[in-house]
Length: 439
Ligand code: 5AD
Ligand code: SF4
Image 1 (tube, protein in one colour):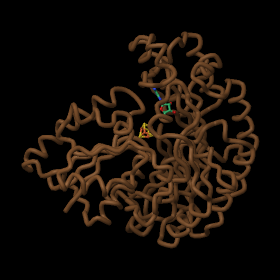
Image 2 (cartoon, helix red, strand yellow):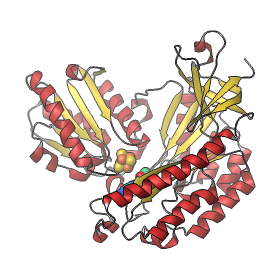
Image 3 (cartoon, helix red, strand yellow):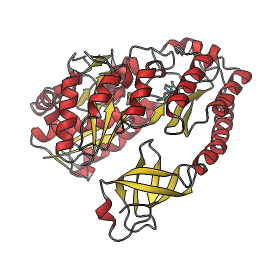
Image 4 (cartoon, protein in one colour):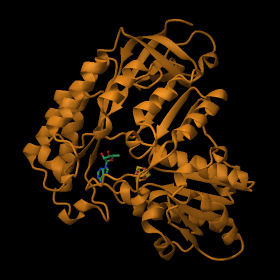
């Protein structure tokens, strides 16, 4: 019996897929690379932006044909954020789907599969298991040997007015720190070099200790090289967290500080807790504590309802004032059930697209300069990719999360999983090139 899981969206979805895979493996299923061999096919979906439902139904149309080729002998399941959002409505448009499993009931999968097998009809569970975030770590089937994903919290209580996440992922819940440290230690004992802490608001983490204290505990695990975390919220980057990055050599120093806009009126309409001024104060504090030893990245939305040209220009100048190493920028897309839906979508598509281009062009120019500024500097690079055919056959990321391609002497395999001292010799827009200093 075989399974195939197709995953869209963020790292939380990647990790949910690892949890679903582990669950299927404990039921006796083995993974397959070939969709037509799958007895169970799960589509793990995302609904953060644009026509997510349409994309799901068009993909399901293809899976329907695969199912027909197998004479109906394939269980099709929709999981993830579209499943959570649409629930049983999915069956009315795609009756060949067998099960719909939401984001907060992962442990229900075996029961649902058994019910499908015993001809009990369509199965749907979009309920909220208050212990979903306490998923048993031994039931996780991990895709990478050297990089381990660890859930530390789930959910979001912020309700930014553009965002669907509070509706698809529920209220904030944090895992006890002892469980997290034990999972990290076990991974490290088994050869994992890098862990990535996951949460919809990862730094809103709170159990009996704070996020900064959790980082300090993980920094003690000697077999680990790097501890990363996604996705953070600017409101929870306090001085304690920033000083922890300065003092703890294993904690990654890329600071993702999603601004969304550079204009305080738009930020208020977005329901963000910061103004432009607060945000710039935070950036100044980061620069004061960490200087050049960190990278800064951000997310932006252009064309939020009511965004005037001059307000958009404030976003452009924010890029210039901050100096980001990378940005992720998107055109506003109205999401069902969110606070901003009442404003409609008044900024025309062409105008959104024009603003996006201006923003990206501005960033590209600034980014080129910043990347070039790294030439000649030394970094530690944790090798996680090998491409033996390439001129630069070894690749990995710096502690501040910049991708570096490396020349290698001899067989590239011997570098895999090592944290190498590297001198930067060249820079592109998104990646650096370098030479290994100590072999
Ligand atoms: N429209 C466009 N972009 C969005 N994002 C979240 N919701 C929307 C939306 N409705 C962007 C934000 C967020 C990133 C993950 O996706 O920039 O930080
Ligand atoms: Fe997509 Fe957000 Fe759901 Fe992740 S949490 S899968 S980004 S909608």
